[in-house]
Structures are given as structure tokens and as C-alpha cells.
Image (cartoon, rainbow, N blue to C red):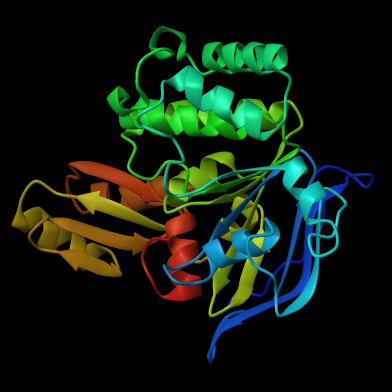
Length: 322
């Protein structure tokens, strides 16, 4: 197991913790879901919380957003204690869950105006805020159409826009791109990056490890009710062995000849490939190709695999995917 790295700031010594949890515990009956976890998210950054299904990611979000109360531990969100000042915390945060909160019978504009009413915004301000968000999320043309006619990507954008009506300082995104096609997912990534650039703090749970790699300043891996590792994506990947070089050959004869010359760690006769341990550096590749050239072996293609968050996840939890 890779040890947790702690919660050092990535934004300088004066960075403010927008979310802080210490010794957070939660059980349901005899089942312990969270067993004393610590989390810190610095202001204006993204923390991605990863873990297998059932690891407690959504429970952690529910505790931090006042939906549930912990059995033990201390929480501060936007400087407030949810147990003592739940309404103040709710005014400071926005939450986008796994399932859209959009009302399909209402138009996009009506959904936003409803949120403005719930936030007790004056009517004029609510209309202005709704119009601004419709434009920002490129929903102006569909603003007066029923949300039930929106595509999946449009609904998720409207859902996030509804979260922003109250101008929250801290946003919890619980698997916000589940079910989206790759193009819609990347559009959401751009929106999320834009929010952080404006100073918003985000705690993100996701099923997509690439999403965490693309967006997060720090990643925390939750397994068995505990944080088993935390760090920047680069730090976590750097601590995982497993970089390798894959060689592909045109036929079985070339594959066999290469296997005699080299010391492969893996072989796939059907795909006509060999795998070798290696860091993919220029000197390593040059030496490898020279040995094959000296043995008169032709390589059809070569690829280098460096550890990614999938490798980190597998090493830490023994499971594929979040």
C-alpha cells in the first residue's frame, strides 16, 4: 500500500482551506463506511476523491454538505462548522449530484428562476443571474424550451448552472459527467476549469480516472473507509512501478527471433507483441533497437506505457475503475 502523503498546500503558505475534515467517521448499522478520514481542499483548487463503488465517496459528500451528520470528526466548510451553522454552510456551497436536479417540465430559464427564488434573490436580480448563466453555458437558444427536450450534455450544463445561481464559494461535484459522451464531457471540463480560475473551490468525485488526471490539483484515494493515498496526480503516478515498452511484429517468426534476443516480461502470440520493462527514455530505446538491428529483427511498431491513474487505482485498491 502506498502511504498517504498528507495535505500540504499546492498554492503557497498562505493558502486557505475551503474544506477541512479531521477524523471523519460514519457507520450505517454495523457497517463502517468512513473510518476516520482526513481531507483538505485549499481555496481555488480541485480535489478529486476516487475510490471503488461503495467506498464511501458519496457519503463523504453528504457529510460535508450537511445532508448527513458524522458519528465523529470535525468539519469546516468555507470556515463554518456544518453541525453548528448548517444554514451558513448551505448558503456558501453548491452541490451537483450524480442525478440531475433539472425539472423536465420547466424550461431552462424557469429552472434557473426557481433556484433564484429558493435563494431568495430579488426578481430582477434572479432574471439577470439566469440570463447570465444561460449565456455562459451556451443555453440561450434553448432557454425557453422544456428541459425534457434537452440532450444529456445540455441537462448536465443546466444542472451545474442551477448550482451556480447562488454564487457558491465551494462546489461539490458528485460524478458530474456520468453518462455524457466524450465531447460533452470535455465541455464540462472546460467549464469546471473556468470556475476554478475564478477562485471557486471544487471537491470532485468521478468514475473517470482520466477526468481526475485532467482536472485535479490533488487526488485522494478512498478504500476500505480510509484515505490510502493522497497527492498530485504526478506524485501518485511517480510512485507506481510498471512502465514498460511494447514491441509489435509483422509475423510469428520475427516475434520468436525478438524473444530470443530480448528478455521480455510479457508476450502475446495473438497480437504478435512483446512487453519489456523500461522507462521509455531515449537511451533505453536506442539500446533496444540496436540489439534488434544487430540480430536482423524488424519491429513493426513500438509504444511506451508510463503509469497512469488506472495503474495507481489498481495498485491501491485491486479494482479497475472508480
